[in-house]
Length: 95
Image (cartoon, rainbow, N blue to C red; front, side, top):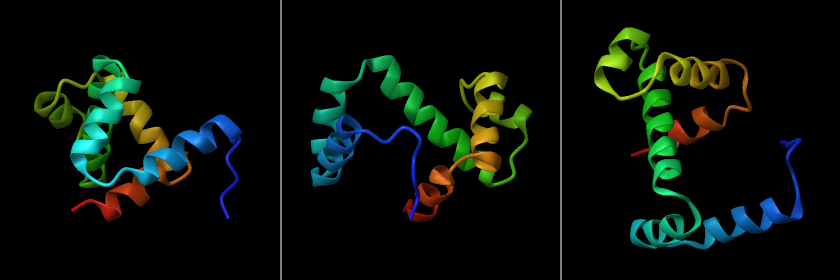
């Protein structure tokens, strides 16, 4: 079982709540209330960068295809290679 260094009762409550959302519409409603527009767009962009990196796309091509900076791409790449495998888990489950 994975043990996060960030684990807390507040984060448990947040993640358990997210798991109770039942549709994309419910997710939009919740995340628009809990996040800023920029935070939401940044999260979506990071996931797209992870997807493209996982497809072995080059940094230069990702920069051209998205609005991501090379620093964002590098951070996502570091998480893909040395992180908790959260991106990889999510990418495997994406439709």
